[in-house]
Amino acid sequence: MRQKKIYFFIILFMVAPLETRDREFENIYFRVNLGNDKPMAVASSYLKEPGKRNDLYHARNLVDGSLTSSWCTSKKKGIGETLYIPFYKTFNHSFINSKNKKHVITIRISNGYGGNPELFQKNNRAKKMSLEIYQLAYTDTVDINDETFPNYPRIIMEGPILNSKHEIEFEDNPSSCDIDIPIELSMPQGEIAKFAWPDLFLKFTILEIYPGSKYDDLCIAEMAVYGESIRLPPPLHPAR
Image 1 (cartoon, helix red, strand yellow):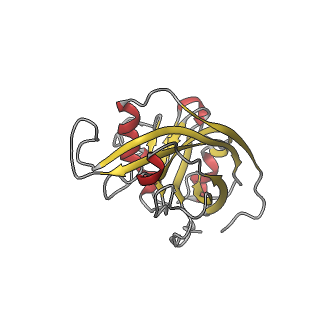
Image 2 (cartoon, rainbow, N blue to C red):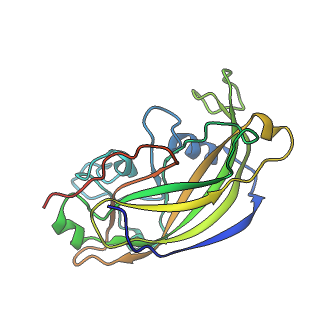
């Protein structure tokens, strides 16, 4: 279901390099942005309950295509926690050969403990998040060396660079909801623009919550971000 009423504010920043890229960033980037066949969401924390499997509420539940599992955290009721969500991109040309610099990405979220209406109400849900969109320029290579992440043939030529920052408010609804976010790519300088391709790296931070009726744990069942021209999978709906 596409939300009819969505309130969010967009703050565009001048594109400026962040601090020097390090191995920690590259590790997260390649795990999250389709560095292998199965994308991986990464969270700053996840809930561990005594007597239950340690990874029962792991961030990988956000991208498993099922409402029967959820990412959950108990840290500070979820406020301030960060999520890195895979971007299913459709940038099919290098920067200089791209006909359009303006694009729209779609965030799809199944908020709360989506597979169980009772647990949806008992646990916290996300109300507001900030979204930081980072832009990268990359090229593929067949060589694996010290400059590439192990087992993945990609070299980051420029970035991460902050493209824009957004504040998003979600409805308190367990069904899948889609939110469109406009972005505009910034052209790299020099030779990079001729052969490097664009990619986006997405960081979400939870700002506000809908409080649960019983627990302080925050849960989200599914979350993904899609580029233009991708046929979105059918939305997920909880059992009634």
